[in-house]
Amino acid sequence: MELLQLQYFITVARLEHMTEAALTLHVTQSSLSKTIQRLEEDLGVPLFDRTGRKLRLNESGSRFLPRAEKALFELEQGRQELRDLSSLEPDTLELAVTTASTLPNILREFRKKLPAVHFHVQMLSMQEMITLLRRGEVDFCLSSPPVWGDDMECQIVCNDPIYVAVPVGHPLAGRRSLSLIELKDEWFAGVKRGYGIRDLVDSVCQSAGFTPRYAYEGDEPARLVALVEAGIGLAFIPGTAKNSQDNILLIPIEDQGLVREIALLWHKDRYISQAGRIFRDVVIEYFNGNNEK
Image (cartoon, rainbow, N blue to C red; front, side):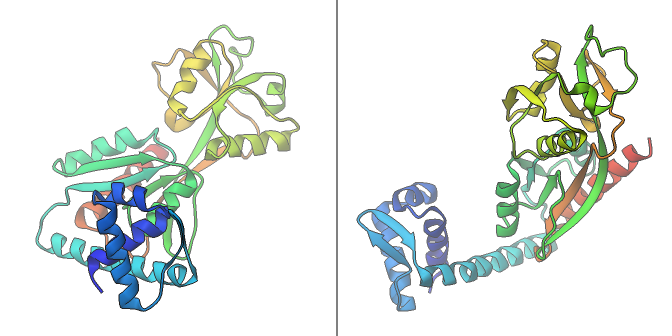
């Protein structure tokens, strides 16, 4: 059994499509098919059910997949540990986030300590983020809401109050605070269902006695401020996303519960490089400093 066979098998198993897997691996489809066939011969069982060009992981393949993933995961951890022992900084820290408002400031602080380390950041849904973390394909996640699991470390780093954003000149603009029920007849601009802040806001509003009406639903949180300025609707904006240059007013909400938790996640069994440990410390220090203000 060869390492290359395991790498190819895992890719085909995840995609269940030989052509897409070949494109992902940058190999020919015939070469990929032969490698998978050799692996099946070595194991003595087929790993896929084949119907024409369609491919589906069978019971044997489903049982073998997590073991193959674990084997490659452990080898990658060993490679990273040896690289770290050799005092070679990693080329890239892999990050996944469901909330990005604080990330520029965090990366700026980290760059002051290790300017040679690069980043690859992905803005993902909660499920996508957790899948990559469990596969060992990302080093850290910034998540709201927090996620707990037997294979994950989850440290809450911030309790972030949520405000209602209104445009200058709006009838509510002069208020120092608002209760949620006062917003029941308003229209809102927000992110789509599935985003942590959207699900939290909808749940708390429903507990207050109404369901928010959305004139706009998107997947770019940064766009909401412009939509509020344009009068499209009000928006719920977390405190960490406040910007004094925005031409809007952020009014505190009186109701309890409209506070989001931000957590830093990492894999319990994954080796954390020196750069990774410094990044983790920077995140914790950054939020501790902001919480004290």
